Image (spheres, rainbow over the protein chains, first blue to last red):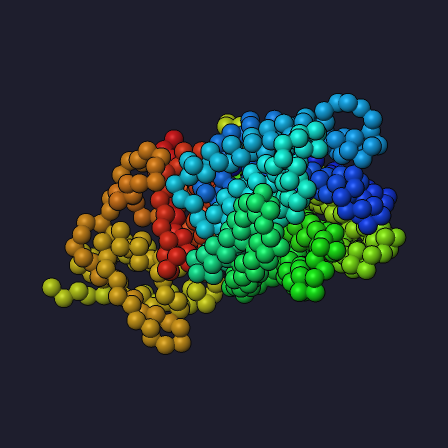
Length: 451
Length: 173
């Protein structure tokens, strides 16, 4: 019986995450938030958090529950802790959205939604951190890419902590430091979340997923170490340094500029490592997941250039919306969708055919997907994202919304592919379920029970 | 004592796309005490070094041009490993394991095919048999599955960390 390494709730995290992605895109297409509204208005805050927590964080949590144990060669501390975490995060996000509606004056109630959101989101992320942390502590060996994940998890703590500070202040907290941090700390919260938790963790995971699926050598390069050290330093300077500077009424711009220099210094060796992984692969043909990851990685490089150019011309503050949008959708979502395409197929294959593996012929993982069909949806998504970013840079609200509709079409096309994979629809019906196998459920993985 | 060598050229088998491991092991089985094996192959047969090392053979190899290699396997006088009862399911204590009944190179297969092939190799083997495979990394999913299935395993990196050789002993019924 195979299935010892399947995370039961990862597919549930992915499902909810994809729903949140669709909701965020629908909201933007409908004109909610920036650029139709101000960047700090309720609509913008809702779109940002549905994207960052609902889509990207749940995607990352689900992926880590499955892959962190694989990365450190130790079983997950607890499968059972995963679903309460998912529940707390989802309900916490709903509470946060209601709190923003209250904040915007759209919802007139006295219910303390900010407090509820803070408690639930701390509980949800806390359960995830506990689960992953206990898994890490039990591991004998922590390979270099996992240190990126650890740094990302630390950044998640800061992101949630700052978020809780803001929620307390917006919910009526009067302490001076709460108000000061809330007034000036938004960029730190965004950097810790998008740059630390999501980007740094994604970098760590990408090292392993790219190597695994392209059969590239394990990286034991100095460049990986440099990327880790400079990246962690960038985060420390921006977030920890930033908090100190804000509270001490210092020059935040100076800290953020230093962090930007360090971050670019980290991305260069990371880029060299990624090129090395693609060049040294044993597989002659690059599969769609790794090709589309390449597009997302190119978007990350473009993002770095964009940030530096905007910073040099003093436009970074004005264009923060475009930068955050491109980071979330060009880089992180691009990478996320590319890897989901493979991970959903891989996990579904393991769940369905693991029990009879080696005893009878089974379809291959590649048979669960149709690359050609998915390819057009990937390009639709990316074309929409590039155009939408340009529309934001030029402040064109209506064209932006049209571009988001294109992104939504690409996303829905890809979600349909994931559902087909999960349902094994692309496999010849006669070969789909040989004796001893069963159809996987859509949203939960059933690890095979010992015979 | 001067060692005499039995010659075995496996290049024709390799050119035909075959797997010469069985022929090599058959030739080793037929060696008289004190006899060695002179193997000619179209690649450096690194996996064999550890397999035959466990059977009491030293190796010395030289590049004979065109990518071909000549390897001399010389008996060290150490006792050849004898079959022994299957040990408990741990990653240690392989000194008394018999030679693998199959040994395949799965380094060019995408995941999860190497795992699938290794499991199939184990399925095809008899209880207590050892199967071996060359993989492109330490297999992160296969190993927990092997432990869950109750098979003993042992593995090591080869080629300066670029390959991973795993030996699995099928659990006794």
